[in-house]
Structures are given as structure tokens and as C-alpha cells.
Length: 209
Image 1 (cartoon, helix red, strand yellow):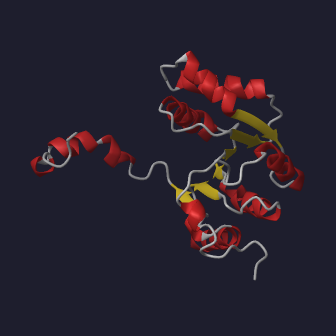
Image 2 (cartoon, helix red, strand yellow):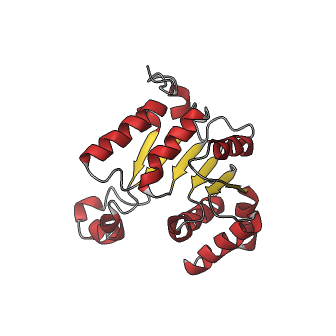
């Protein structure tokens, strides 16, 4: 049996609970700047995000530089910023610098997580590093009770997707692996109002009552 493999039902309680920390691998990257930071701001604004957010990247940044990166992201995305909400978001942030191939990076991450026991690991990194990071989490003992979120593409082809899937499932239970395509269904979402008003049979169902 693989040393990282968790029993299929080991996280049944965790599956229905909220994560107590968010770890964002690739926090210095383009996806975080364009998409993730504005989403985190809105989550803080709505009260959905109150847990620590730990950014991990190889960039030689200070925490202040990460704060400036987040602020710039919101400006570029034309987000109407409340100073109070921005302060709350920035107060949640911690930064861990390190090479994803270095075991010491995961030791530093474990220290930054503190008492968190059910973190969500978001992999906004190049696909070639997915398996490396997942394996690193397993080797460091950070996968137990946690979830992992993987951005597309999940492999280059069928064979590489299956290989990555084997790595992911050797470290995390299937129920705790989330494969995300942030553009999947985008066209349908953008046209949802048209769809609703163009189909009169939906009117009695799709309303605020």
C-alpha cells in the first residue's frame, strides 16, 4: 500500500466541514493576479472568507510586496474597493517563499499553517508542477484532513492525466480532490439572464420567491 494513501472514508467528517486555512501555491503568478485575488476580496466582503490565506511561491517577496500585488490586482480588475474589506483581506495573508521541489518549503508551510488541521491547497501553478507539489504535501504529512484544488489542464493527454490522477489519489482521497476548469461553463453563465427570460416556463421557478 502506498504510504500516503488514506482510507476512502477517513475524511467523511472533513468532507462536510469548512477548511480552516487556504494555501495558494503560485500566489505570485498570473492566475492569482487576474482571477483569484479579486475572488478572495469578494469572499471577504461577503463574510465567506475568514480563515488564514497562505501564499506560496518561489518569488523573493516580502509580505508587503504581496500586499501591493493584491492591491494592484483589485485595481486592474476594476473592483470597487472598501478600505475596511481590503484591510481584512490583507490581514489574513501570510507568505512562504520556497522551491516546490525542496522539502524545506513544505516544512516552512507546515509552520505557517500553525494549528490548522483541514486546509485547502489551491494549485494555481504550471501543470508540470502539480505532481511535485502533491507528492511534497504527502511526504510532509500535510494531506491528512486536507483538500486539494487543481486548475486545468489536468495532464497533457490521456496518459499524463491518468499518471497525475494516480499521484493525486495516492496522497488524497478522491472526495478531497477537486479538478477545476475556471472557464468551463463560462458562456452559459454569462448568458444566464437571457436564458431565463427567453424561456417563460422557467419564470415561476427562477425568481426570488
